[in-house]
Length: 394
Picture 1: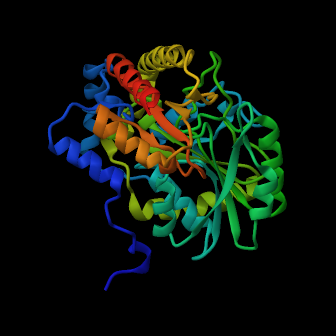
Picture 2: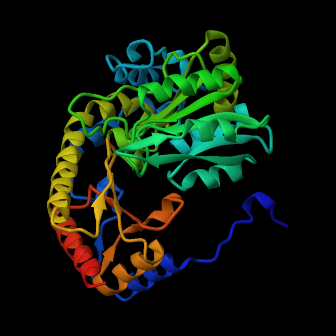
């Protein structure tokens, strides 16, 4: 009766069962996985946000397949002055931008434009597990290419080339990666563009965490105006820390003829769904305008938690933190004497501390835990204390 594409394993895993039991018992929970900024104690300009959503123009239905022009212009303005691949990203044309209800929807649009059923998309490992569901829903196959760690994270471009087949349609990069926090380096970008241009493949660059660089200067966007067709994805969820607003976009770049053909097809898909709501589109210029104040709070929290974590680890010989360049997460290397899931469950059950096992993010071996750096500072510090106590006692 049901399709094979939704024939997922619906059995709750041990980690999820342990968390459910913990919450049902009403126990204290020190959540070092917090990813929802709206519940992490940040100060939002509530009046400004709510007034932006009260635009009377939203009472009239005036659909545009790509999204309202004013909203797409706001996206183009967001990129103004940011360094890009080859040119200033401020030259992004609003006509090359399509608004979606989220980056997941943008992925779906792109997969439908690029892939026949059974085609392949290369994606980085480690990375966020949501991609697996998006792939099966769009009848395509994900093929991992490894990121390896050697004084920082790097793309294994030789392995990426080896993974290509006649059915490969695109390479996906997450810039910076979630959870490793690693950016695609300029040399890697040049080679990846060359590979994709040579094989008539596209690049899909997920840049939702782009504004959260560990450096003081803005990091460059990855894809704009390289030799390969590329799609850059981002949205309000991370840029303005407003995941509930459900507005994102894709921006096409690369050779003009390919971009034009891609946009023509994407526009038909977008017109079929007309997904983003008018109020949030009309509010987009203001919602992007408030980002600096919110981002500064997030960056301050990230810096404070990271400093405390490094200080706590300084005298510890069992656990180390892997280098990161951006994003909201920190990856810990722990003794690989058991499964990451076992360690995470034990931390939860014995110390009330919630962390992500590395396997959740498709680390290929045990010995890794992932922590969120936007957890409130008091909770983060106590959670780290208990985590170290657990490993010292183990």
